[in-house]
Length: 430
Image (tube, rainbow, N blue to C red; front, side):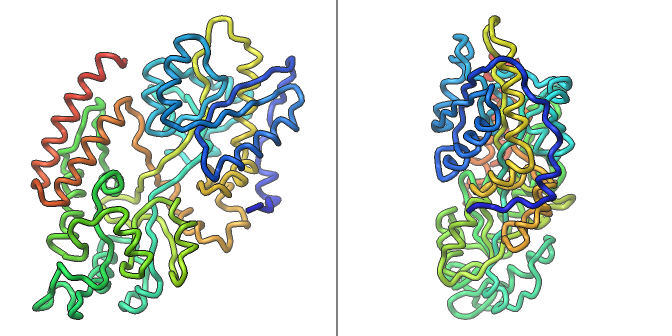
């Protein structure tokens, strides 16, 4: 979809410092290999056309390939000039010395202001007080809702709080005999419609992480050790378990795919998933739905999981041409301007900065229902062992939701496992 850029966005970008050095060629490695690839390639072409002394050669390859190759490329002095790294990998590469900090002077010279971006999103690529990347792509966990089923169930307001959600969930859940939870004879094993299934796997862990952040804590403590047994983490997971066992507004054994199918079929009032599901639900015949940011199901604040991609500069060999670094910074500055970000969101991402979210082209776009929550989106980032922590966390949530372990034992076991893996990682990461 070609967007018509509003005057507001076109005028909002800060003036860029022009690169005046000799002509250079830059290699740009990214993982946008899906429907977003043509949009990225179009942007690269536009940059090259506007910068006769800089030629960017884009290279798209699967993210996993980049995670495997980047370390050896850096070690052998063959790093790409610019590389895109995702939120769950960036801190690990920083800690291993594969990326270089973007100094305050460099950012200022290039016309890049972190104040222009959503604060938590920018901070995703920060480490030990330094910035290592500029956000180019953003996604977030969202709540989809079935307008027709809500109306049929007597729910007149899309919930924004825990109390409102539980009240709506009670109304949405009806067994095949027409009874609701709490009524005599209610059969939780034979539901006709329900609120939203509590899923397992990565998506279950992602939803649980969002509630943990809503409870004011994180999956790691200040020393970057696993902190699954905090009161806030226990409360978050117990709330999800209660959806199945206490409130009976979720079927047991729900999976991400079974809940997507149920939402498509009009059987669930709500579906918790990423913004990437929006285009798929748009194409579902007969599904009258809306999308909004995650309600506050936790106890202290609004928050939701977010994913992101960041433009970074890898460490180079000692003889690296300083003109290429200056040109790379100009490329990063241009690519993350509001006008380019607005173009990029046509590929399915969210605005990285409030100025873009306010653009009038979104006035009739359902994705705008998510924008109010963007300042409260938090990535699992900031520590080098995100993979070890998330793997153990996701397993703990699944064990608790499926009733294989109590919440307390599931989290304690997972914390012990994560701690062992973190101890091993600390031996190689400083």
